Amino acid sequence: MPQVVGRFAPSPSGRLHLGNLFCLLLAWLSAKSQGGRIVLRIEDLDPARTSRAYADALERDLAFLGLVWDEGGSAGGPGAPYYQSERTALYEQALARLEARGLVYPCFCSRAQLHAAEAPHAADGEPIYAGCCRSLTPAQVRARERTRAPALRLEVPDRVYALVDGHCGAYAQNLAADCGDFILRRSDGVFAYQLAVVADDAAMGVTEVVRGRDLLSSAPRQLYLYELLGAAPPRFCHTPLLLAPDGRRLSKRDADLGLDALRARGFSAAEITGRLAFAAGLTARPAAAAPEELLSVFSWDKVPQGDVRLPAGLFD
Image (tube, rainbow, N blue to C red; front, side, top):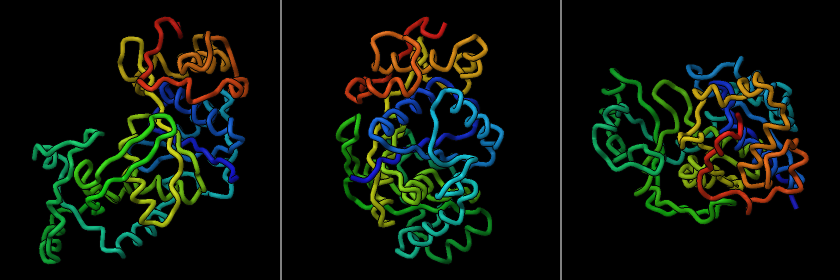
């Protein structure tokens, strides 16, 4: 049986908070409990939002917690480079293959125009694109290019793409009705998440993708891309989101629940991972435990289906 290859794919746009760590711990435990490997890929596609300093800090934080990876990051490995900002040639190749099939077209709609159209919205909150630019003639495209650089969209079929998520169960979307044609490359030239992660996961041999439940709605789009690019899709496992005790979704703005703040208050690495394991339902009490000590108790069956609110006082 082929070895499981999981991955960490953080975006270096800030310091890690408990929500990030919750997902990363589950990804590590899932792959390692199956005798698998972990690839660390730095998703720094957007130069305006990410930095190498944050990427380096991410590696230090993961090493502190004992969430070690087998290849990737600054250490490199057989799939190098592991920074998306250095993998543009791969995305260009994937885009060219899709263009050769006649499925890619320029889109001149601004974000404001899309939201002002009051179109239906997809599960991730984005408006479902109505195909306004799909039928532009070459002359119309040239005229519009004089005043605005276009994004590039992928035409989707009127077809259902379904999966059985390793944690959430059955999920399906009709791409035309529930998603609409989606962006492959932004108007500023930055490649979109959907294309980049599919190209990267396929090239790096990733067989299992563990990520937050807020990304479940992107899985059908990615299945479509895997099909078009002739690559086998991974097994998806979407984790519940970790919420603050008051029910807020955690973000990098929650400095009090960031790793830096917890370390400054004296929490050890094992205390942090042990408490996260308790929040995930893996243990009966929030005792300190290093990641490798949690392998024997890990099971997706123990992890809640719904979002997890941090118990009050757990990190006080």
